[in-house]
Amino acid sequence: MRILIQRVSRASVSILGEIFSEIGAGLLVFLGVEHADNEKDIEYLAQKLVNLRIFPDENGVMNLSVLDVKGEVLVVSQFTLHARTRKGNRPSYIDAAKPETSIPLYEKFCVEVEKLLNKPVRSGEFGADMQVELINDGPVTIWMDSKNPL
Image (cartoon, rainbow, N blue to C red; front, side):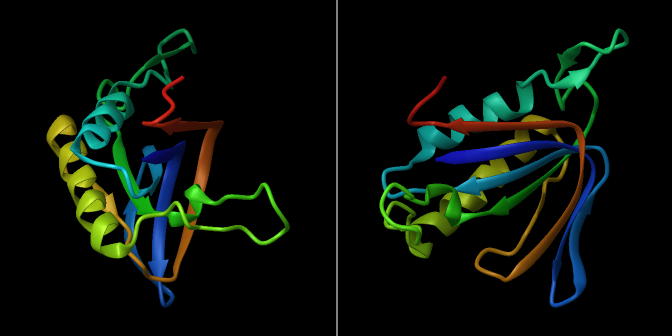
């Protein structure tokens, strides 16, 4: 399971020209699920996400988490995070899980983050053609992979 995290001043997801979800200050999270992912991947990444200290403290040092700042979270499914680009110029997505696997894991990830934050998590619509708008704060963008924790 992979997540791409962006610290944002605000973010929104639109579908067919209408805003579907939006948040204020917090984290925009793109989530990609692969075949071998399971509940352990969800637990690991959800814990890391909500405790990641990437918000500035009173001295401007990135020392606070989304929990600490009471920020919001928007999670958007993105199978392209598992793109293979080594050969040729057309990405391969064979590592991305099929919807019957990825939808339940995506939904469980959102629920787990909600529990840890003790507040609702906003989301996109799985499989929809979405337009994502964001104001990246910092900019701060971080990549995490449950199979390759760094």
